[in-house]
Length: 212
Image (cartoon, rainbow, N blue to C red; front, side, top):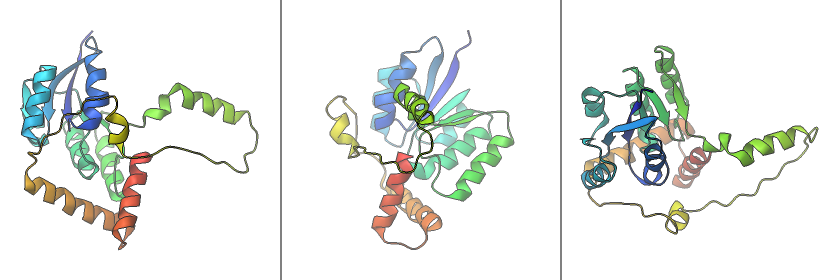
């Protein structure tokens, strides 16, 4: 069986806790060939841990210099559309973490890029395939007309939960220009999606996007 050559964009918390260990556990299916992150120290650490030699500080270089079948877009949501479209334009399959987008215009851009190629885009809504969720869907079908539903959930800072079970590597070497760029993108995208609003509304919208 031919292995799928995978590139990873963003090797932070979600990559370290979920995606990288799973990909490593399936060596008969996947070969991690390239990592991309804006933290040089994190890039070096994860490259050494997973024996990946092709390390990049930006996605453009990775796409131009690596031979990839698929890419995992796991960086901040402000960059999901840019990285997804860039991969699609090179006929690379994409797994993009939720949220796929911030604005409706970004959705159209991704769909148009996908439709112009023969590749696929998958959004990381993991609960779609969870046994408990699939069982719940079957149970709901047997209930008849539903008039009212109430859902209780526990949501909090990821660190509260992940800190008890995982050792996530973080380094304080992210370039200041990258910090400013993300902030500027977030402001622009939030205004486009929600309109002029207080920061707490933007924060709530961003939280809901991540919980979809």
